[in-house]
Length: 208
Image (cartoon, rainbow, N blue to C red; front, side):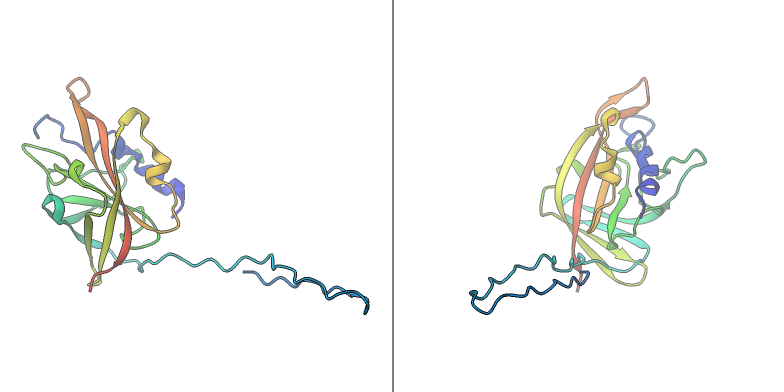
């Protein structure tokens, strides 16, 4: 997935919250001719790097449900596309969460994106996202019947005006997942929270 397509989702850095508070190439090395009275040549170390091993991942399949036992999340997933202005859509209510259809599906190589509100008219789907800890598990059920399991590696809070776009949406060489909601203080002048909570996770295996 090209970075440009993923960066379009940056709108979630300034939205996604309630509108009201509380709501190996083969290389041939030439041989060297050595005179008969000269000691055998030392073995020349190969300069050919071993072929890269592609990180474990799954094929494309639409996600339909996300479960995060550590914080009590069990939500179906709706599709989130792009608005006319090129920004990412957000769920219209506090439930369910949604996944960004312009990025990889969870389990594919790259950063899959799932976003949800922190509150609406009360606690919303990702109300406790800030309580996630490294090694907590996230399970995503997919339309083809497969289940992708991710392990949380990092949970951070970022000011929306300093949102690390490349870190969150940029290309990665493994199957990753970003869970995004709002956090920090509520700013009534702009009708949004001032920060984003982002949980980073890495694919570990298909569930069995």
